[in-house]
Image 1 (cartoon, helix red, strand yellow):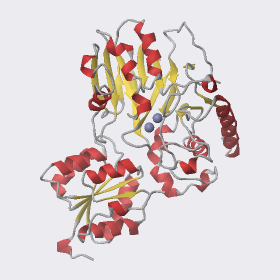
Image 2 (cartoon, protein in one colour; image 1 turned 120 degrees about the vertical axis):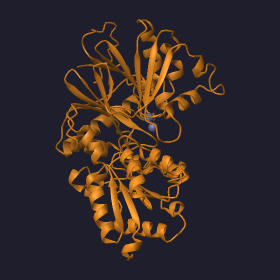
Image 3 (tube, helix red, strand yellow; image 1 turned 30 degrees about the vertical axis):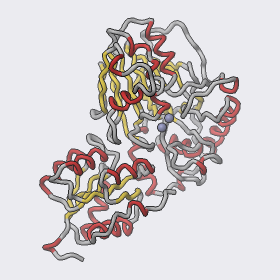
Image 4 (cartoon, helix red, strand yellow; image 1 turned 120 degrees about the horizontal axis):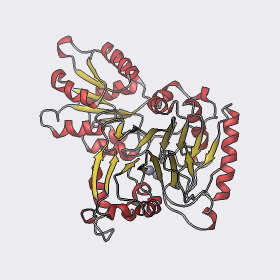
Length: 442
Ligand SMILES: [Zn+2]
Ligand SMILES: [Zn+2]
């Protein structure tokens, strides 16, 4: 199609070797000159040597997130002219809109057909306007509030297990109504995941203990995961050092988001007035090492910069992943054999990250009959949650991030249904519902 001398140069950036090879082979045979990079850092380095005309850019990649790469390319006059087509399975509307605002020519959802890719690339090189705006819409608990905790036994404690918004009242007494917060106690050190409303009570407990370093990991900064932070007492205590970790790459950095939350329009005390020493740490290293504790993380399928976490306690591997839409749009039968190969490729990294977990703490927020009305909201259906457990060979599942519409009574029925679905796919692992105050020792 193009003369040898006029070959257009395309840089493929994707951390999946399979996708890099497949796309490189197909585009080479269509007359393009190809280079490939497996992460954001390598992409930026390759741009200076390969001088691409166009970049096919994945979003969820290690080292430098795809959106950050896009921003860097478009803000540098030496590279701002290079066309960028985003290619990702993470195609929530806010993410797509953001990439277009930052100068991407188009957004292609994985798995994509080669025809679709080629048409978009040809559209770019022929000078057609961005098709971006024309893209179609994508379709047990224990309840032991133990006053004595053995300091030598590692444990996790749920301080909030409700998704989206806190709830209260007689219908929610058993499982609780606080939004997500998980305490991890290891080697006498406290690591906290998420700062939903549950963190308020955790802060009251920690206040009684000596000031010490605290580490707070934020899965993502939607309200339900940060709204308890302004009420976290240790943040107000001189002598406490608090490190907050979270993913960046979708607009504001972590400090700006927390600072915005404490803006005087919303709250009487501002971030700079808190007396503890607070350090914000945008996630880059993987794992993050805190003393002897290692926290691995991976991007999940949810709006914005959202991640899940993996850590080891007492010889067990635990994955905590609250908000994640697995098999987005899949409404088929709970049969792993029916999931297309292409769909499995999109979720390969997520499945690999979870594989081997002794305990998966994750959502399946919607019943199967609720899910068709909530596709693209960033949460998984009951059936798809069961499929994830089977595909990742999870040994135990604790369901959390309960929907605010689901009462205690409803959740019990939902749990029974979950066990039925697991049985129907011959994957009968222990499954239970997380509840505020529940402790698991390891
Ligand atoms: Zn949430
Ligand atoms: Zn969310």
